[in-house]
Image (cartoon, rainbow, N blue to C red):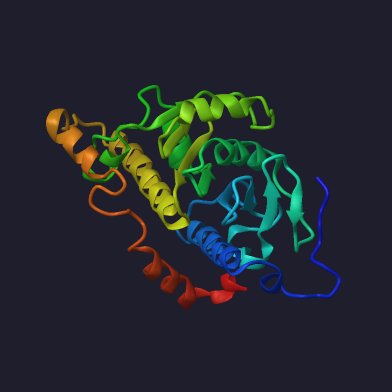
Length: 260
């Protein structure tokens, strides 16, 4: 895909985008840094995207070649649903698989502003388990009682797979990509990060619990259904919003360069 550099006047990226887009860029860069801090990365692989505010067909995604810990607001690449690079201030391109997966979700789900995809060890382990996600092991996993599944079709390079991806995802906010990894969505970056953090923790818990080789006491019935219902977005609060300022403070103490 062609690379469109910033204009020759050498303006900063912040000077060339709207206030709303810059804020999204900062939060998206923060999300990448947080994924690094919490160990949910695989070198330069995987991707997080965020819809460009005020648009239905444009989103921001990482420069393919940078580590998550290197991401900044200015390094995010703006592309459209058709794969055209609209704005790129880096010397890198984008990951084709990232384009296929994220364009599918952003095109089909206008309620979604952020999409995260990972290949964590726990996530990949659960993706290969015939039983799928055991959300009834503990309270924190019960929010994923209606997780989606998508069968493995090889590396996500085929544009035709997009239709099947969004069909399997439906209106859910979490999906297990069989023999592949995890995918979450959210109406905002903070909410999507929270969904992914909790889904990853649920996978880690499942792997650890199954290693114990002992009979399990699993929640079921009405208490499981009621707990799942109580975790749905907006029932008690929008999960991730309250936590986000504290997470940004954590990043600012470590390295505030994600804001650049």
